[in-house]
Image 1: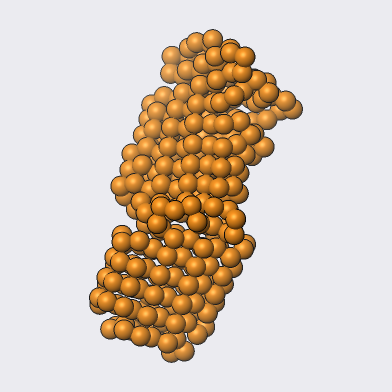
Image 2 (image 1 turned 60 degrees about the horizontal axis):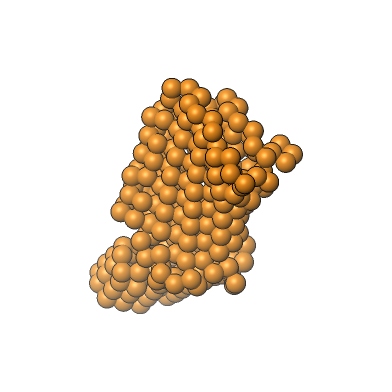
Length: 271
């Protein structure tokens, strides 16, 4: 076992038949990097190479960010299983190609699992969770949390309903109700909110956005979009110079739209 490397930094490697590696930061703003060099992974903390470990010997890896605004990044080709706890501070975590479990802390975190079947927990704070290839789970938490699918090129179907039915066809993601905001991709997306106050952004393409309950903001982006507010006092954004369909539903609804848009059950309109 490698014990204390410095008074403020700790790295432990359990030498079992297949190793469990544990890396921890401290109260400062740490930069913890896992880079690949041939068949090895080089573990760097704040610019100092702390250890070199054979990739074939690693079964799982634990990273603890502790306090501070930390950056924890993995080479995108690393495929071992990782468990990451970012801790306090506004942290940035970017996983590799393995099946990652990334836990944000009580502040505002940016979490990107990379490839693999990842599970992202925003915890408290206003967190930003990024979709990648694989079957991923996205959990929000207290605060306003985003799930970003903007890198997707194919049609998306996303519903904030705690079921594994989200993403492109066959992706089988699960965007939980605890997330409030969703950003769609470049194609024709269907995004359905929850009972919370959601912000749904379609992006390019002919999108269908449904707010359901809550006071929602629906932004179709470019394309001929269909926006359905549902219950609650909703706000529609459809000023893209294309013919969109906007339906308010219950509540006092407001739309920023064009003259070519078709509006139903919307009390206030401006362009």
